Length: 141
Image (tube, rainbow, N blue to C red; front, side, top):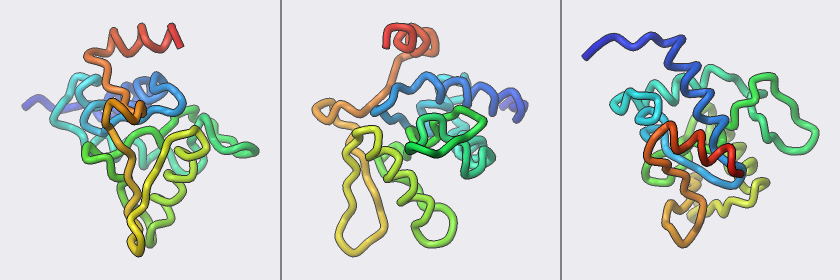
């Protein structure tokens, strides 16, 4: 497998994330696929983690962020919001941001696992077949 240039890959990840419409979510694996490296979903997570805590573009009112990358719209392929940081602070923050965008986030009682449904009926899934389609969709919304 050829070496992936991390800086170029991260830039591609950020550009693709900017195409995800407000109120929609996709998976780390789908971002990797659109970036041309379908086996690098963990590297997508690394790229988003490097943004830091102030990176969200469509942040909650009053929050800023210089990167304009809606990291909160990327979740695991099972629909779970990945745990990170101490306890569930990172996951609950991501859930809060998604809820602010109108995404229904569920939580099982007594555990700190948040989930978003990728079902067609839920309407939150964003899985364009190609980067060209993703860009075309972004210009129509």
